[in-house]
Amino acid sequence: MTDGVRFNSIHCSTLNLVMLSSRRPLMPDNKDEYIPIPHKDGDFLIADKSAKDINVEVDFFLDTPPGMSFFDACRQVGVWLTTDERKRLIFDDDPSYFYNGKVTGNINTEQIAQYGTFTVVFRCKPYAKGV
Image (cartoon, rainbow, N blue to C red; front, side):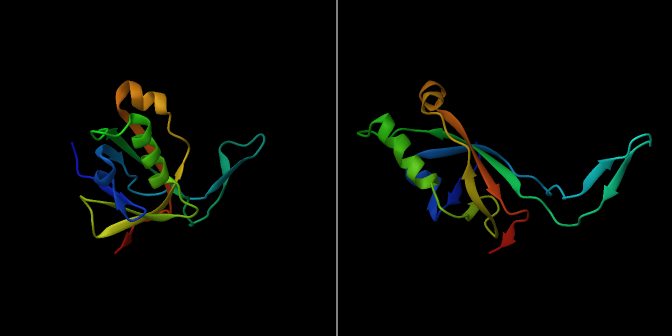
């Protein structure tokens, strides 16, 4: 088990979420383009030093609080993760840096019901920034 994460100014523990693991890329992919040239070995490289967004994945376990329905607990998580713009994503084990991210994809309630776990994918700017 690992520490938690803060997103949208709220710590995951506030919602009875336990962060199980995360996958944070060390470096982003660049925007290089490779163009195949017919009848020539290899590809033509158009170098681009700019970086693509990164996907930061976080696995959670939902511990439904006593007196709250499972579905209400799921709805609270959905409200927390829904934003119109990128928000700060701060990991407890690296609190001096943050990612600017927004949730992509969806979370399947049935998966949470069956396993208690789910994965959230945050699409973030290429580099973490110092607080």
